[in-house]
Every structure is written in structure tokens, then in C-alpha cells.
Image (cartoon, rainbow, N blue to C red; front, side, top):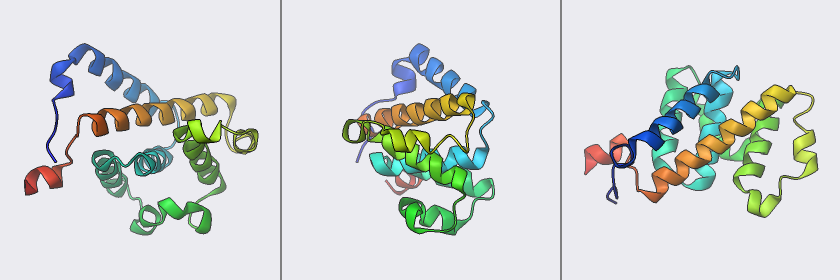
Length: 151
């Protein structure tokens, strides 16, 4: 597979704004480990190899375990995730698949014991941002470093 275009070069102003959103979400107060789990899970659902590669690599560098990364797509069946992470992952799946799920009340209400209203907004923006990144990367065929080096 070959990249279709360099989106940063093609539209630097818009991409700068996207990077700004990314930085704001990253600095929103959500814990880094949760951010990377959410980004990885949404990227798995969206089939974004570039983002899966990036976020699992970043998560490992920050101390995330291989086991938790391997089992992320089956988080419901694993005891390795906290209740807060489970609520965030359920919300991630619900919003990433919003056309199918409609963001059901029970999933939203599952956030209540674990997230403040501000954190709910920050988490939702995180989910929205990674879904945009996934669409950019999948749409323009972004290549992760291992594939670029192999090619």
C-alpha cells in the first residue's frame, strides 16, 4: 500500500489546528495511560494501522504492559482493566460506532461513577479527535514506520 498524499504539506493550516486540538486534549487532565488505551481501541475499530502502531508504541514507552495491549480488543472479557478504563472503553466503542449504537443511555450513564462532567467532555473530545486522525490516516493511506521501512 502506498500513501496517497502528505496531508500536512497539502493543508498545513488545517493540520496545525488538528495538532492544536490534539495537544489540548492531551493536556486536559485525563491520565496518559487512559488516553493511549482509548486511542488504540478506536484505531482498532477503524482499522487504522498507522494509529495502532503509533499508540501501542507510545503506550509501551510509557510503561503500558504487553498483556493489556494484546487484550484490548477483548477488554470486556479481561480483568486487567479498571472500572474507569472500562467505562471509557465502552464510551469509545459507542461513539466510534455511533451510527450503529446511537450512544445509548446506559453506556453514557456508566461514565457517571468514574468521570466528572468536565472529564466526560474531555474524553468525548479525545474520542472525536482520534476518530478524525483515523479517517485522515486511513483515507490518505498513512504508512506506519515499519511498513515504510519494509517497502
